[in-house]
Image (cartoon, rainbow, N blue to C red; front, side):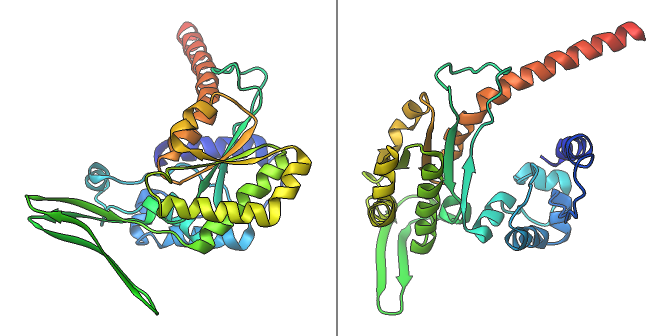
Length: 290
């Protein structure tokens, strides 16, 4: 969150960046208090600056829940800054670990990195949800230029419940597909698209169809020449594939962050074990000196 990220980032800049590079850095304070003071406009400004300069480094931030709203006396429970930035950039977030020879791997089979591409637009990060009271009908309505789609979702007969509606666009899905195809081809690694299209036949099925269309139209011959492939994967098999390495996995934004975290967390944990060991040693030295 906001508390320690400034300390870590300042140390990184002082030791690894400023001694070697003279940079004109544009700063945007995404700390939860400043976001609250600006009605979260600073997050939008940061995203727009990223589009302008084509590069950005974002540190960890706080996405407030009910307890944080009370703790910091916030005006409201602000949305995830990551979600806001991703939605404006409208791109794909690729997460890939840096493998160090002196940091042991928890999964011995990970001889190469795993690159996880997460679609960075729409879905649950921009969903509309509500708590519903009492009986009633829940409907999903699309008022188009040429037609109206009206679907009955559920008929509540008891005390009520909860509901959520989310979306995505063909344009964003196509961009996601192109970015995924391109990075897999650049790395000469196979590409897997992870969906639940057997359950969400329309929603996930749209991702499946667009990916296949783009693969057939512009990438199939290139992939075959490079000896790599594109395969549609059921999301149930993600954890199995994560036992392997040297591939690109494209997946949805929410939920798949768990899978993407698996690609770097074991490395992070081992590195953190080493850091904690060093910290304990330094603490003992300080005790002896004092």
